[in-house]
Length: 330
Image (cartoon, rainbow, N blue to C red; front, side, top):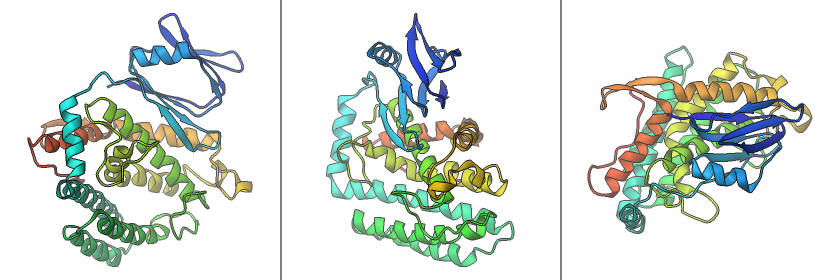
């Protein structure tokens, strides 16, 4: 498993001999150990050149770029070397067959919704009464199986999320009035955190897909479109409750993230560097967290669970094994 580097300071990113070096504006240089690097996140204002881009391509390193305010801008995705024409054709066939596509999309949403339910069950077991929300979500999960179109099951998922978000004011101990999900732009601390963390999960998923033969632009739940890797959106749905939302609850309830980590004058729209740094440190820890995998009989990290989801999808697409979405079992 390679390493991830997060660059928050402004500076220059350059190839130096057979390595990558970041030099900050105050002249401090750091070697990024290209031989172990998998991905580099750029949060600061960083200058780079084509010599650097060619070098990261040769080494299969993905660059994820975020703007000054912490919003995801895009990724530099190196030329794929791990390709399979056969899988690509089968991936497209599964998308083009309405029944097959719906089958995969339902499985993704059933897994994602179950993981949401498990989050509520966790906090319900710790003295917060979430019984009504759990009951309603459980009922909606059962309806997913009978959905007849992508639009219909997306509507059910929207209702599940609405109920889920309505519980956050009970789960989160800080006094933040979170009423609904607002994205463009986020309107309070929690919405800003969700946007930032979801971007991280999206980019991590892209990096894991890159290591497989899946094409990231052909998806099943979200409509494939231009200018986005929609399969990342599909797979991310499953892992948001486990990796992202549990982390947000923990950061807020332990007061690791407070109002001081946001720009107050912008209505808490922007995270300060201190906030980004805290989240990235915790996010990295979460990705490296390991659990004992029942099927594999060994410990695997949360990050590797994402790649396993890609492998399961591949097996389903080529007709080797029916896809069952990842559900929290511990």
